Image (cartoon, rainbow, N blue to C red; front, side):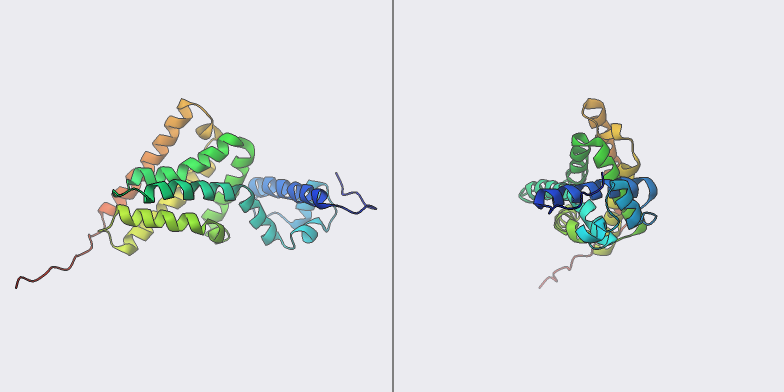
Length: 224
């Protein structure tokens, strides 16, 4: 529906318009690819005036940021909460628990909103594959916690090898989730079993990669 003219719009009107633009952008980004979608196409798909995106977001990049944050904020908060529970434990973190802390929030999103969450995850997968840093700032709190946990889990592994293996693991997980069927994350034991398999697969790949890395040499104390 096109924006009505001739009356002053209040905060609720503005928020509804922003939601309509984000809905349209998320759908187009998922279906056609972020780079292929123009601001004009978003305005048209939302049924709004040609200047709507510019008025409410300013740029396509700002609109993309808003699309990522709308669902991503809850995912990041959930990852952080799960990581904090692991960080509070005195024992060394289990890699399985760390990866589950990353995967489960995405599953929760898709259980709550399979269609919208699936489109959002498709956009995230595109940006991950292209190496875009557009998600970096919003995801920083979760990224930092996960990195702390993985360093605690593998304290004897050289940092460069650990960072590389962990980065590849995260990217692979996101791409697998983005390309996987929504039934992977539907409620029910069958989907839960599939998620456990996904986590186990990632753990196996990570530990196998790290097994090839030499252990960090610890300094020895000379006998006096």
